[in-house]
Image 1 (cartoon, rainbow over the protein chains, first blue to last red):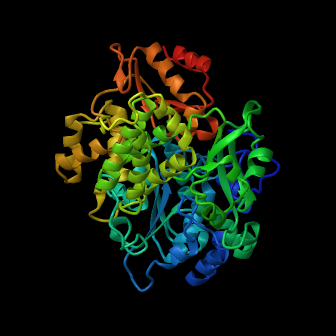
Image 2: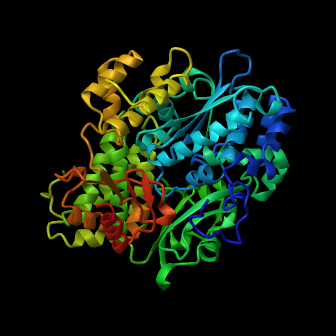
Image 3: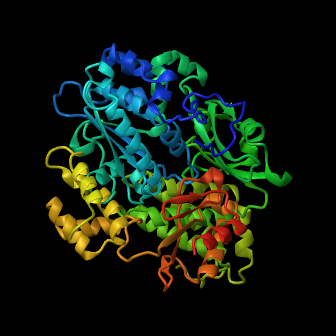
Length: 435
Length: 157
């Protein structure tokens, strides 16, 4: 299977180790390269032992929020005979992110094994891989892989002779960023509009079809087989304390070697961009970057000499997010970046709650007004104020996702907004229209 | 309304995927797969799926209205989707979209009178490290340049 970009010798390959292997998506390749060893180990352990192994790996959710995976699994109630489910978030739609696509394409059995281990850990009987509609070729691909898995006894009844039963299906989405939010995804899985649910209860208690559900990102499940195979400590030691393992970073924008690379958590960001990403294109200077999908606050170039792990990024006022890193050179118009980001969130706001629906609409209008040369000086402050007022006031994180990059761009690149406004002769007039 | 045997088999399989009494879960996959065969989500299709799943046409309609990939009008034989989100924008996605508008003579969500091409400016399609990227129907094209876009469209005549 063809690789989309050349690998770098500086990568640490755990979830991407089969990328580029001949027939990497076939069961025989998988079995010949350590496949299902983690699952077989898990089957000989108790549920608690499996969860504790994952906890000891300090694996954190790779979808964006970075919640500790073992802890999330531990929230699923034990003392119930009700059915339990596993749902995979393969709705990958955070702008800048294109890693789950590669995992499903090159190593689908790794995902399947991770799902089975999660199912064993919580006693689940059924699962769905919710794949965004644009990845239609992957739905067909995974369907074909599942067919092989059923035929060869690696799915369905008595999996790999262990006595464990599990059914797994693909579920195709139909184009909605909001369905990447876990509770909206569950609504969509039930055949409804993808609007978020009020939480609590969290999916661990009441998830898919109101049953206890483990719901994680593709890459998170993909990390699990090697954690069971090699031990949680092995995985944890690859990263930094409380930030175990490796992660896929999708490098995009004005760099010489954009691509998806797997690196240990805690790698220095500038080292990553320069040594793996080949530095800036055309000898330009770097101006800023979006570290982990467009929902993250931006960093100026001088703020990027930091470790890429969840805690260091939080300390720098941003997030590791989904791993979608977009690098911008000195010629980039940050006001236009802010407008493009807001256009996206306005388009994708589900409209369920008002601060997000109205906030994104008005922010887009104000940003467009500035770009169109009709902005007033007070608009710059108003954009920041309005965005701050959305924070924490919505059912789901989409409101925050729209506000956070906007606040950071206005704060860090204010002179660019002022330069736009200065061209408007009526910029300081009280009569400038507000809408 | 009748569908091809292949689609009927897919529907029959889909309906076994959900817990008892919760087969409404099949609605979105059924709409997506049926749309490919029918060409659009027609009123007949909505009524048919509503009847099969035991829900109202309104419940189907509100779902269709929510998702950007479900469309009530037929698209062109080749539906050209050009991403202009940040990663693509940084490397010329917006210019590619303008180029496609000019070349195809249609705008956002419009279809040529001949029915050959339709165009859509889309949000992130998950090809950011190989930007700018476009999709024609379900096929991805990566690292698209103005010349490559012309070549792709030329090849689809």
